[in-house]
Image 1 (cartoon, helix red, strand yellow):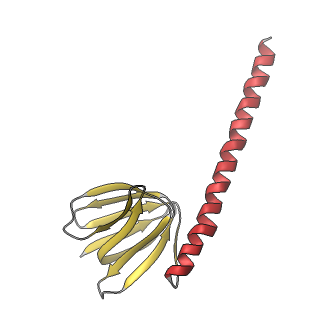
Image 2 (cartoon, rainbow, N blue to C red; image 1 turned 30 degrees about the horizontal axis):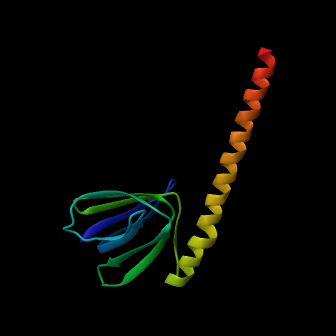
Length: 128
């Protein structure tokens, strides 16, 4: 058994014993079991699944983040995570909520870049 902890910026989202974890990185999906070598990767928004001690598979939609497997502990640190009643609804959640969040971040970065450009223009005017 392994201890799976999913950590959000403000809370521990999940902390339980599992038999395996399946997640997705930019290279594709992968499966971790208790005797797997220690492992570190960057996660992409998607579905993380785990098999609990009673052989039940459960699914969690996760935003981008990091996964570290060290000995018998799997730590997942993500910006956002959601559990859902079924896999279909979680896939829809990833598409709707997480992708909208990414678009808002992109717009915010664009706005900050414009502010920086305007600041530099104003600064250049004062130098003249």
